[in-house]
Amino acid sequence: MKRYTALWFCHLLTDSLAIRLPELKGKAFVLAAPERGRMVIQAVSPEALTIGIRVKMVLADARALHPALQVFDFEPERAESLLSELAEWFLRYTPVSVIDLPDGLLLDVSGCTHLWKGEESYLKTIVCRLEKRGYQVRAAMADTIAAAWAVSRFGRPGDIVAHRGQLEALLSLPPAALRLESNVAGRMQKLGLTRIGDFIGMPRSMLRRRFGQSLLERIDQALGRSAEHLEPVVPTAEYRERLPCLEPLRTRKAIEMALEKLLEGLTEQLLHGSAGLRKAVFRCYRIDGKIREIAIGTGRPSREKLHLFRLFSEKIGSIAPGLGIELFTLEAPVVEPLNAAQEKLWNDGGAHQCAEIGKLLDRIAGRVGSDAIHRYLPDEHHWPERSIKEASSLDEQPSTVWPKTAPRPVYILPIPEPITVTAPVPDYPPMVFIYKGKVHQVKKADGPERIEREWWLETGLQRDYYRVEDENGARYWLFRSGHYENGDAPEWFIHGFFA
Image (cartoon, rainbow, N blue to C red; front, side):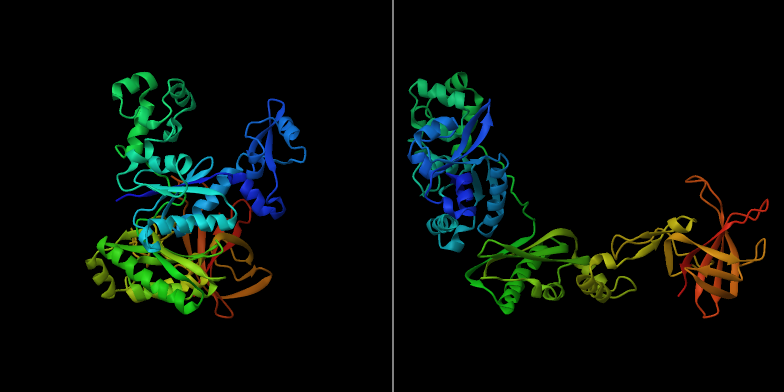
């Protein structure tokens, strides 16, 4: 059974300003902006409203009513920013929270209210929390988004529409409660249709002819005959677990117990979906409204609870619980297929497919960062800079084999660095080379190995590579770019280091 909650912040912008500036509480003030050469009021505080000041009133007229009226600049983008923050804050009460500009939120609360001992307690809890923060809010709950929206703005505060009771709840409300365009609602008022009950039973063909198809669509949405799509402020992951707390938690042990509970549910979901996670995010929602999170990544798909818990446990110490955590969530935003046969294969051993190696790399990545671990595969190119490529995962297979006839360094510089050499000509290896100001005497050398450029990709000089060993036993990969021709001395470079 789908259930939705609509929240209407009656004085969103002015309440927010009063929260930031407590000295404004209980005082009449407005937010104004220039419009056609005049300052026009865009938002009013509750106190200003009681003395007759309204939105769209010219500021000069408002000051005639209340000379001590305080005025602040109106920021058009402020409402969306505030609602975005509030929508994220509401993720502790529902996984789907949606902005409803200019002054509302829509929540999909299906399956959530029982965690607060019922719908009435749920609605009362969220309204009280918002009022404590300083917001005046009206809320309603119904089977459809449109019915909840209508009742929250035109019904009684805190109304909960019974299951399939949206028709009865709408009958006494004005046409504007259906979110109609202003010109359509105005025509209805002129015709004496002041309540939804006055026209909702009329033939649909008559309503379409007089007021357009949009009216029928709004009626269908309100009665649940057609669905409305919600775009959550934070997209909901397919694999996600939530754990609300009866009392705020502050200790590491309690956080670990919550994590174990969430991992148990998440790995069960992954098992049913024949999937394994590559990334997981553990979020802690504190009672002061702040969110703390930690994330882990794995080298290959995994749903092994103990391994995932160990990865998280190394980061739990970074979570600051503050005054207490009231909700935990665990989601897997990145998953890959993982069936039982794959799991068995990986755990049966093998060179790079060993599960224990994958676990070790995951733990190292959790400490030093995934960017510090790289795996390289051979690529089908002769030119050294293009002869290797970085693997996307531990399971990616090479398209070719590593060359065995010509040894390559363990570490190749991304860009060859110039060196100064003393070498006989034309094809002898260097006897001495200077690299970063240090002189190296060459004791052993092997080469040259000529590598031509791949003409279908670029043009330029070929290279003659030498493997050399200095007096300390260190080995290097050097090359000469070009020939000794016409008395010109070619350039020498160092390109890599052997183990």
